[in-house]
Length: 300
Image (cartoon, rainbow, N blue to C red; front, side, top):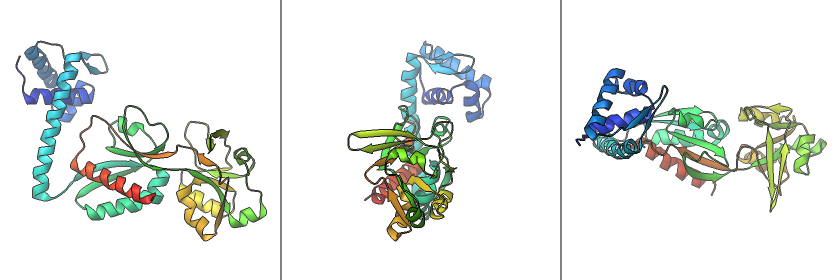
């Protein structure tokens, strides 16, 4: 049996891509050339390494073992290259980061501007959305998400707890009844964010008690700045993340209700998500460490 590092790296690229055509595009080779080298590797080891279907290529048990070894070699080579480059040119690289529309705009934008000032040579590409499958489709390196139960296939790091508050402008509360129970959120003109393709519900927790209430907002949007303005304008009762209105409550411009309940729509935790088998560049690791530190300071 004869193995070399280049053959193992080829196998890694093929299995990461999921099919020969994608691997060929990544390596700027023809599909036939990729297939030839794969066949030669299987002949060299005397074992079938992949199972081919019309759409995908999956590893056999032997292929998976070689893939794992090949991934270690690939990551070590990338790390060595980064170390040399950083010595010569300083910290650089690119990171594609996905952040939630609300938290990303209201809170994280200040963090990331600071990050760019500290590391001007790192190219930072930001995606403001609330999807999780962008990680799975290899579109982003790191995603920040608000949820309670992240996909088990991802590496998860908890950043901070999050909760929603029921609130209204001081003028609105002076002339209108505020909700006294979670169920009464369905009886007031409600201003809140939207959840695509599923019924909007709020979970309310008080001690060991838990209630879940279906919501029917009279004003809904994914734009949190707009929701903030609508609540201040006295258009109804807001159900929004606490970070959106904390300054208004402190200044007396808004009041809150249901203060003895912990409210959640999307989830109770701010999480950092990444793929388990994807190499983390020095730029990505630096960004992750920075975000973790800022999130810790934000809630303390």
